Length: 555
Image 1 (cartoon, helix red, strand yellow):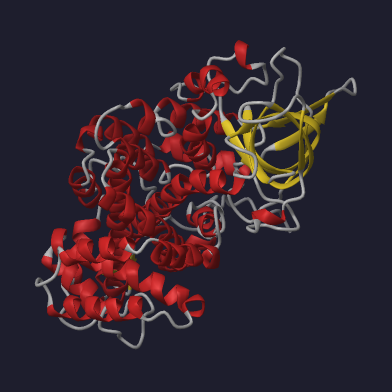
Image 2 (cartoon, rainbow, N blue to C red; image 1 turned 30 degrees about the vertical axis):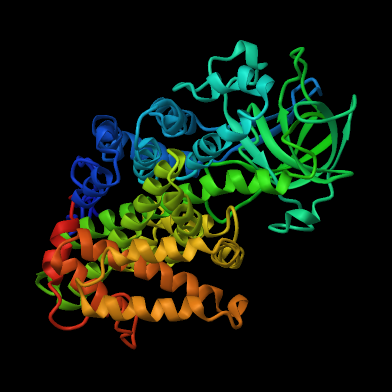
């Protein structure tokens, strides 16, 4: 029998009914909810810069950089080929490209360089957009943002580092600061035996000549988590005879020699894989005291206050990008002879996701305005910032994983494949809830804010009172919240319930005041009237789901 000489096709099918890549959009210009929030909270002037960064989020080039930076993870090089200790971290070129874009856009610095009203809200806008590009880079940008007030406390540190940290440039070379055009800042606070319990830290610091603010100390100990270990300097905690204290540890000594800063290993993390997290060792390591001895916990919480704002913003941005991808997919794929988004159950799910995303966004940007107004001297804003920071951090970060899991499910099997962006977002989602205080730690901070300053509750209720009279259901919920806040029994046990009630009340009040009637009514009906099933897609009858979805679409 002769061989089969027939020519067979190289493919068995044509590719049909697959949603295209979500490109060619501008996540600022095309997002009405975001633009309204930015203007309302006093940062409308950021629009040109935000538009430029928003366009990058929709470009295939930057989406591919994000994919590659996470696919090709950082690699630790402890020694060079001659055996010299070098403690460097090597990154894929895409990571460096992303760092140049983020730092060149002022994502890390604008709050301090703009010198105009609304600077924190403007910087929050850039961070919100950045979290729709690549989340790992959000760690070094966020740490640089939150570190500036601490750097300014010590003149020699301020004069040496501030200008290069605030530079809208990126210089990854492992050189002494004098030879660099820009610098980055990392943090190394927690230890393996304590985690969030910073008072359990065992790293020791000994003064070289008398000690005191700005003086030289030598540190010895181990840090279980050091974020961005390639940075040029770090804020860290070590114990003196007076208790936990805050120190500034540069990678290079004043004479240009290497500081004794040893990277032991990189963490193999569930997500956030483009960003290096490490264990480090201090062994006679040079550091300068920031503030007073024994005041390190207070200094750490001061930095955490800004990073918690950034995590509230970042989680809202992460949710927004997952929503954008989901709306794009469900409007460009058909099932059972209909566009996927047009199936009633899917419309319910999508509208519910849209409401959750909008609520997270308006809450985070209201907090950003409070930070701005507090910096300008408003006592009412300071009290509101104090309570809303942990509330927004807890609720936005806690909701993000379930939100993104639902978005992934809307993609079906495609959403679970690593070539797609959803698995990366899914792995990323839980992290912000862990960084700078897990959920229980944050809720305890809410209780401290409520109980240690009597005027905090009054400031919160005054904010909520602005929405009273617009919806009887909201009024009833606010009455219930006041009763809850006045009940001092078992508060430690009820902390999550109290925190969630505050967040829901603030979100509902903001939506009633500023959103469309369709969105506000749906949020109040589904979140305040205690429907028995609160899985996504549980909106009640009569909700204008299609209108809610249409308002959130950007692609």
